[in-house]
Length: 444
Image 1 (cartoon, rainbow, N blue to C red):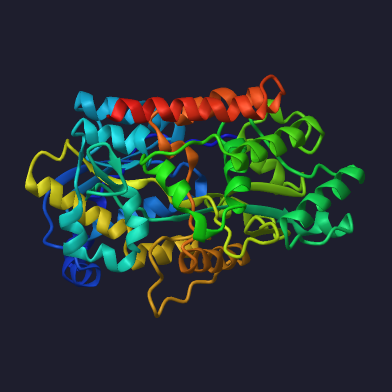
Image 2 (image 1 turned 30 degrees about the vertical axis):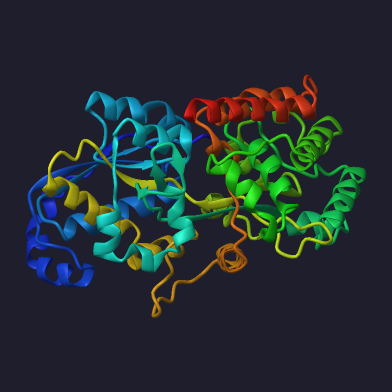
């Protein structure tokens, strides 16, 4: 079932007396400045039920520390945010604080048009660079058309890794062991298919499961020591998507789609609905991200791991990084509004917020406080260990659609054609590369 959250305005008037009484303690506890009467329009993409509950909790806590401040929250899906955010800010009726997708199509385009403000001063003020690594913060940097360098325009609250979800019960019932290498994964898929079990849950009608599958398979074949070529592509430094690895990944996913390795009827199922089917016990594997941890924990048979690397790859990369960044828009017209926005973002990426996310089963980008003792789910424990390993190995990969303003549309337009066999893997990758080369040409 597709779930959305409507625009939410949280009014703190009914608790103002209590907030004022507790203001001194709250300000010391949270490290926030004096309260002021103001409204703060905020857009976020936390539309899943568990995510929305955390955001609402954090908003209430922020308001309690800022008597008179009202968080005017609007929650939008990822796709809706892409369609409406830039237009709303340009028109002057959008948010002051917003989540924004990194990459050329969203953050890069908004920076180019002066619709986002740098947050480097707040990085220094609040020490955000002590909470998150420079390589993670670099994903929010732009210098004109150059991605990954220059001023910083955002910071994220959640870490993201695209990996392999598996249903242990289904695997055990089929007599299939958890794969340790990519070669073993391929053998497991064949065994599951022979036993009449759908090897992969998939839904390609909406959202981006197929994109994440293709990208994740490709990047699992890249050793972190050889990541420069991928980094150059994503950061717009040049290169070509037309590589043997990309073609082979697209070919494999097409073979799975055509050969009965995907859940029947996947073409008419959205990504979110496919996840719910997987949680209900359909399909042995699903490739997607840690943002589904909150939902996945409802089935104790579901586990999460890195996509097994092929033999010879010692430090495989994983698609991921961080969720959409918190950013300040050009609608923050004065210093007071900008500073309030900076304080709000600081709380959203604080250790306290990280603890709240972890308690709800989600993977925070900021490390948990030393004295935090949240009850971690098995999924989150796996995610935290993977996050540590990927950062230690410098193996955190990228979303392919970040590489140009129109890459997501190009991939979305061509993925159904690839899965249905209407275009070849070579044509699929060529479409990506033509999009990218056109972008490089326009940058000059």
